[in-house]
Length: 104
View 1: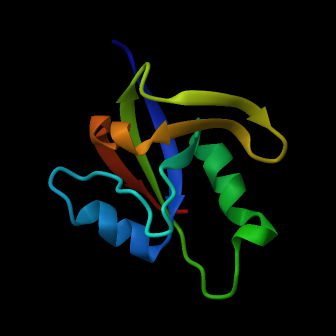
View 2: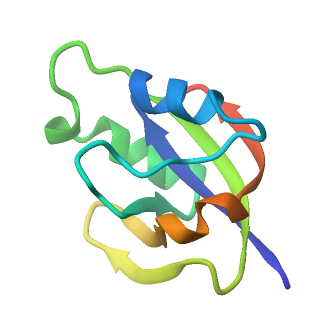
């Protein structure tokens, strides 16, 4: 089916985690989170990464994009100050392809 590009701002640890797999893939978080949130556009994820409560001292983000098939994500719609948000469950993390790194 058609692929949608989703964007995620990741910190250093998550970036290392993604890059440690071949091919690259997201992994379940150490805090037990089974899903990850993604943005629908580069502009939306950049805006999210600049929000004050997402920026504790020393936090540095790298923005990743990847494509995922329809049916492997759930849309939460347009959320205030976050734009269009999509959720992907860890059982679908292996369906991401074509990872790209964007600098914030």
